[in-house]
Amino acid sequence: LDIMISTYLLKWVVAMLDTPFMYLARYWYDKKKIPSPSI
Image 1 (tube, rainbow, N blue to C red):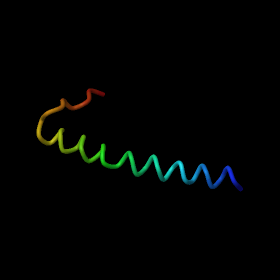
Image 2 (cartoon, rainbow, N blue to C red; image 1 turned 45 degrees about the vertical axis):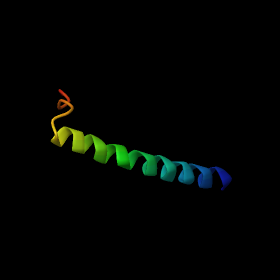
Image 3 (cartoon, rainbow, N blue to C red; image 1 turned 180 degrees about the vertical axis):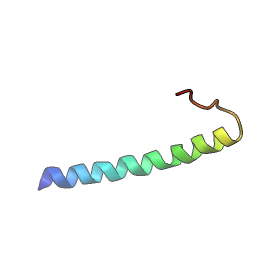
């Protein structure tokens, strides 16, 4: 049970830290500061 709680907590922390960078990357892409990734 303890490892389940810590895993769940870690996922939340990563999600919270990840979200602002996603918005920032989108903002930069819209402003043409970064090139679109080639697939």
